[in-house]
Length: 594
Image (cartoon, rainbow, N blue to C red):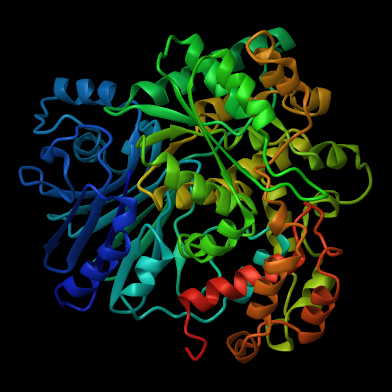
């Protein structure tokens, strides 16, 4: 797990090593163990390493294979690298390191761009082919690892974060109107290749990008999966058995492929608790678990320790829990925002940031339960969508998901930013893609391939990697995702959702954990806004920078400030927090005069 960056020039000039140095420095927290750079004429690479597999200097990056004429920067983990390494050795390849990075180089030489189809894991990487003078980039199937880029007529730059790209300069930081519409409609999800800034793009999950020194870009997808039933019928019992086996394998793999200890982020919910149970079932001893909680508010509890404690006790884990006062949340909020590669509305971003700080003092790798709700239908809005029988797929989805309909969006932003209903167009196209048997199949597939990528998955990566902590997400193992997508939605949504997980947890976890209502990392102070938090948001939204930017309708801002606890989205988020967070992120990253 690491941070990477690079530049390829199209104008005949050598790579700007000063820019590489600037970008690499901004990525240091993602990889505190080693930093390096490499250049070859028009190409420059930078890398920060978090050492997880092959802790020796032989696995440092950028990694250069002089014999093959290939160089690599890589972020992530390839879980099946031992098998690939054996296969490549049988083909005559020789290795100078013991980890997964060098396997990527050899696999690319052996199979070209199709090597990504063989990789089982999470990854973002770039390979420079010295002979062909081509740069090849790839991102994992579920977008677990980030990969941003910017380009103009003279050069192409890429990095693991927006901030790294911005640090090198030359990026158009104007607000992207399409990205803005998505930001306020889809709970801060801006599907690839878009971002909130016109000059920053991101490679879509399951895609590769090839760039040559003439500046020609060719992007290609390498992964699609079916959300339809198998030709041979499968009984409910068979589905449950297959899913149990697939999840068990995903959890064990993410524990075994590491040269350092692996812990678990234990929220107290079904998903993370099941990870603990499956690891214990697999014989993992001395398991370390970590929980975080916050102050209670009149409307909502701030911790879930009453659920996480019994799980830790049952499996005798080395459990640590951290209770964070509201004053600490507000004081550390700017740091958490600075760790966001894109502005994030999810209230648990700060929770993950503060938890990541403490956990990173004890382990370098954790497993986390992200993805279970999307893969197995755990959110409260899924049954509501399923019960809708009238309207188009877009209408059935939007009624229960959109933070704002288009009409409210037009009232949210100033006249300069009002335009088309970009989000409805995007969602309509995604829901209409072939290969889904039913409306709910299409919804769940879209959630896994698009919505989750730029909400919980990105949030967990950014907040843990800010502390040099690698988060592994077994529920997003692509083999498990493919299998679950073919499972009937009715089975997944049974008993309020996530029925397959509830079934496999019986006997492994307390019934109180299994049958409790769906929980979230609670952060009541960012949902029911009052006191110092209200003061902070008011200060941001009434600041000179906010007024000069002119992004929001002042009448809409005044309406929210007059009744801050009354305006929530369909997903139960604070609309006031949405506006304040985006403006604060922009103030931390973009000069208002730019």
